[in-house]
Length: 182
Image (cartoon, rainbow, N blue to C red; front, side):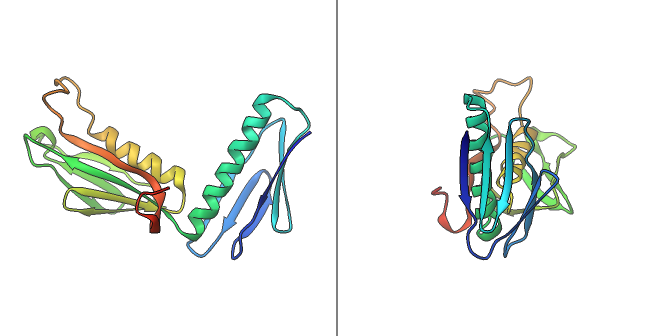
């Protein structure tokens, strides 16, 4: 039998109902679904116990993945996650602005209509000159948002060696107070 115990840090509340785990901390709460036919999860006091009756490599991999997700959730609700992107241009000056839950990337390669990225409500986006900062409590959501922004400026039909304009990820999601060292 495979078993892994994850300690719940101080100042964090955890509840597990119908395969959904909710983690509450000072920055907010995250709810994720943990469902697998061979792996079970339960909360006992200040411990989360992940078990599997079947000792196979895939079950062990799922247990390890769930443990890592739990630790990322704990960090997210206490410290928060940040991602960083850089706006790069050589031909046409790119402007970016946020209106509501939409990021507009204007004048990309001289295009008249702006490129739009819909932002999740749990993620905050700030623009400082040529840097876009994405922050939130869910590491997966912060990383996916950075990926969507980068994908919005993917160049089609131009030589990538000549037209290197775009928005590129410079720092993948990292813990807020640690300046990209995670």
